[in-house]
Length: 127
Image 1 (cartoon, rainbow, N blue to C red):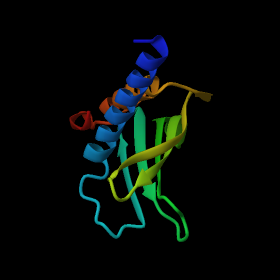
Image 2: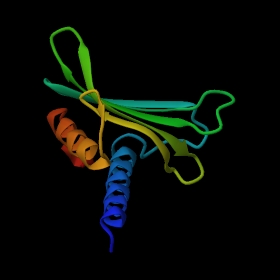
Image 3: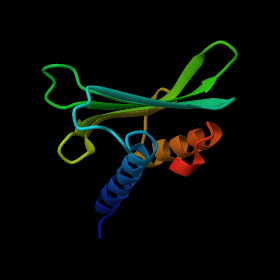
């Protein structure tokens, strides 16, 4: 097995793990006729926001995950994921961007950040 193939397999496995977190934390009871669903978890130090939205005329709805830190007055995003969402499959489709600390990153690094942020935000049952 080549290293490239193993890396692709690992990335696919990490994206599936992220998808499972999304489904269990945020969109476990989404109705079929939704146009926008948002769920946010907030703790003393961190937040995680999940947004699933579909604008009129969109070919595919989009999924956005924002992870960040909190201070006394505001939120400061530190990581994010944007992907298309398949209504038919109830799953992530094409991933458009994965960013941590202002740079593109691997799904594995984003997954670790997401799990840590959910734990800090008081939602460990999702992971």
